[in-house]
Amino acid sequence: MSKNYYIIPIFVPHKGCPHDCIFCNQKKITGCDEDNSIENIRDTIEAYLKTIPQDGSQVVEIAFYGGSFTAIPIENQTTMLKLAKEYMDCGKINHIRLSTRPDYINDEILQNLKNYSVSIIELGVQSMDKEVLQLSQRGHTSEDVIEAIRLIKEYGFIVGVQIMVGLPSDSLDKCLQTTRLLADLNPDIARIYPALVIKDTYMEVLYNKGQFKPFSLEEAVVICKNMLIILEKKRIEVIRIGLQPTENIELGKDIIAGPFHPSMRQLVDSSIYLDMMKCLIEKFDEVEVLNIMVNPKDVSNIVGQNKCNIKLLQTTYFFKKINIIQKCDISLGTIIIDDGKKQIIMSKKDYYDQIKS
Image (cartoon, rainbow, N blue to C red; front, side):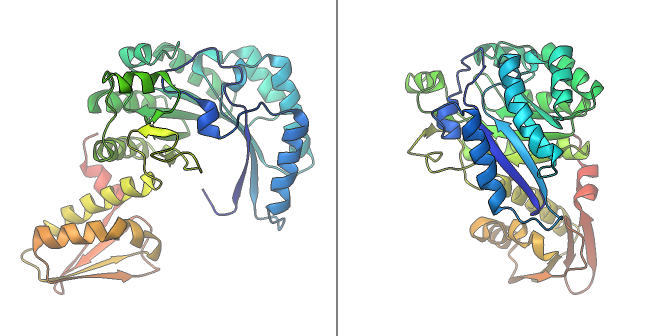
């Protein structure tokens, strides 16, 4: 998202949700132990607005996170939405966003959301695989997802999907099949969350009994990378990969086990750029000094965390030196490799077009 895009988060932990999914402890994830009163919500909005520049270039969004918003009694939904709409009507915010379950979407709910100027609805899909959904105690089906997305699009909302990677019985093939099915439904945005073992969840019980093994960080990066490629090839914007780190959301605190990393998106993006560089390098004969030209904003992904990409290229191809050259006139997502004799250019789109996904 743009640096001029500001989100005012309102957490409604587990409020309205009719199921206890085995991975879920919303109070741990959101860091919020109490339900928000209208007064608290207003105070939160006002406090955030004081920190946001008012120069006309910013986009401001109130986002209801956690729980399943549309499973809350409609009177409670309306009370919170009415407050958010006040700020919309006076021009202080631009969007209202909420997240919910696929099986709590219908005409009555959507019409009410429309009446209160909701812009974006994100669905906690998690998986389109029947076994994964059942073992995770989700309480909805893939058919519910298909129908919910159809209805949300019919009413003209921006629709998002949230996918979880590595739930019980999950696999690379199941994750990719879920992603392909969702990409074919053409949502506007997506989030990808590697499944983590959170304290005080049933998944922690299974983990401690040796009945559940989360993906390793390396496995999760590879799977998320392939999922990202499928979605981006369909021009679906992936707005987040990995759980937002907080004071308690880190390994050794509320996270018991699983592929957590505070910069999961960068690990995934860096892996894609590494694959692109390898693809280009294979097109050269023996090279001693390699020049890699990129946009300055892409440098961190090219180099990788702790220079892991550069170190791997040097040990794999025995370069004497690798030079990273920053050029502002190179488009984002484009790499130019030069060995002093010839140059080869590759954009992300070029690379994606070569991949069968």
